[in-house]
Length: 91
Image (cartoon, rainbow, N blue to C red; front, side, top):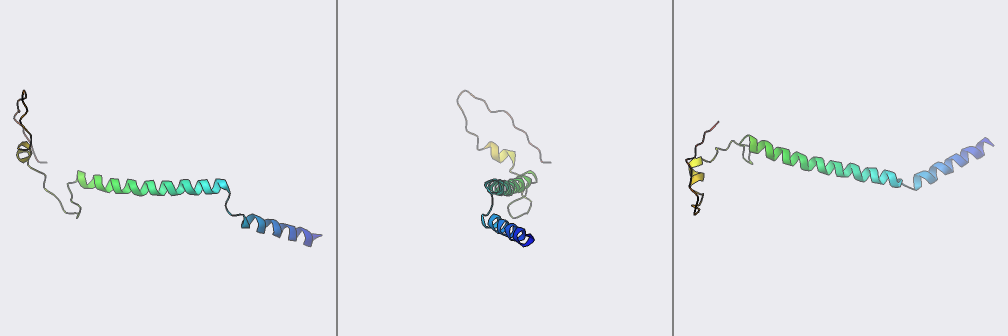
């Protein structure tokens, strides 16, 4: 009798293992994968923002900001508008 129960239990375990993952487990794995991908994208954005905030180029070296006078020359003259006197500072 005990051998029959052990055999039945072994068959049940093998059958359950052979079926693979449940639908819920597959959904949980897919959600976990999406979280990993989103975290990787977030890390890329964070690195880019950190570089921009610290004025660091893509090679990791500091970058000097553009002089505001050089930028001022790029603004067009618009009819009906008067350019002000811009100022700037470097921190």
